[in-house]
Amino acid sequence: MTMLAAILMGLAVAPAPALPPVAGLLQHSDQREALRGRREGRLLSARDIEARVVPTMRGAQYLGFDFDPEGGIYILKFLRNGSVIWVEVDGRSGQILGRTGN
Image (tube, rainbow, N blue to C red; front, side):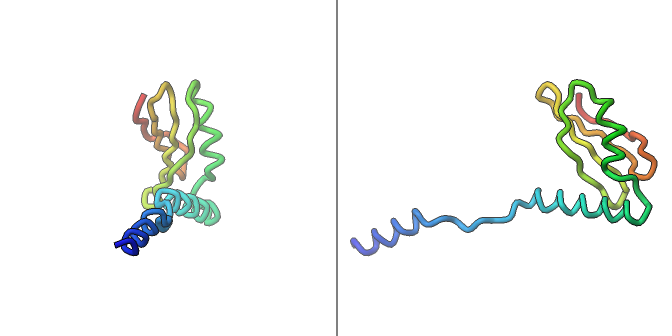
């Protein structure tokens, strides 16, 4: 019985295997796709998009972007007064397509 207790205690304190952060991997994939589109001349750079949109979001903290490679759309994320705001921007023209949130 004491040997079983020792084994169980050892398992209880053993570190769990680390799993990769899926959201982080997806974000890097988005960034790679955006870069590929920029290099191929199909899309504006993320910096160009940010330079156009971020100044229009007064009072909001810019959190970063996601990219939809199928539609060529950047989705910029902001935080204002505890609310998340998503701004969809056409990656080819830089035109704001829509905004969700306050």
